Length: 173
Image 1 (cartoon, rainbow, N blue to C red):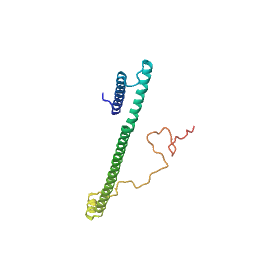
Image 2 (image 1 turned 180 degrees about the vertical axis):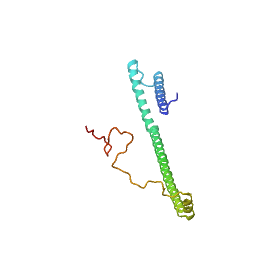
Image 3 (image 1 turned 90 degrees about the vertical axis):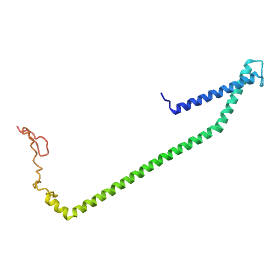
Image 4 (image 1 turned 60 degrees about the vertical axis):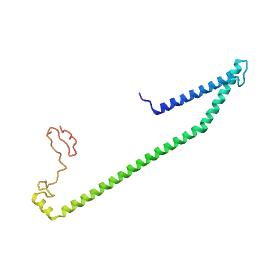
């Protein structure tokens, strides 16, 4: 299983925090063992004193980290986001430009085709060829009468009568 990059970065942050706390605890034990700072015969007083000292050191370490490292990381993240947005906008703009270019090319080809067709229709040799081949615009087989719109079509159902609008007629009887 592969882990996502955010999972790895979270694990690295936790590992860094655990390492930092371990270093501070080691420093507190070394200071206590060397009797360099507030050595009291009472164990409870020593525990409270060194807890406050460790908390103070951790607070100062966190503040220094935020002041120095976090600001730079935030700026890098902001620049990265800006670059990503700019590259996305550039690709969208290039896509729109390519689409507009293709549209113009299609219109240009349509116009050229229409001009070629007009030129062919105006050419007397082409007209003569069409007449000889019998490919005129008007077909001779097309019916010349108008359609009857008022009478319904009979499609094999002679049992029931229909009105001219297609609905069934009422039975008389």
